[in-house]
Length: 114
Image (cartoon, rainbow, N blue to C red):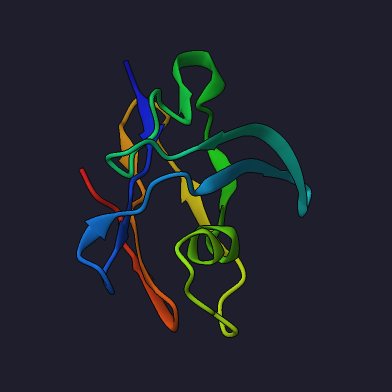
């Protein structure tokens, strides 16, 4: 089963980022179309894949992470990052794609995980 997954780690606390709101978009002709909304659990992961099987197709995607809400809930003023949008391409829909996000109030990093 091919799937798209993510997890979010708060590098400023060294802990998983729980309750981060996530929106997944498939980009068609340059226009993002919302295909899923979810949020991270206590482990900073989603309870199910963002996309899987027939819903995972080749093409352009973006994941939007609402980090402002997350930091506000922690009592952290983050005037720099409000949301993080990661754009990426799925070239082989039979493979797994894992797109983790590492965040702090003033920076973020991502990569293609396994």
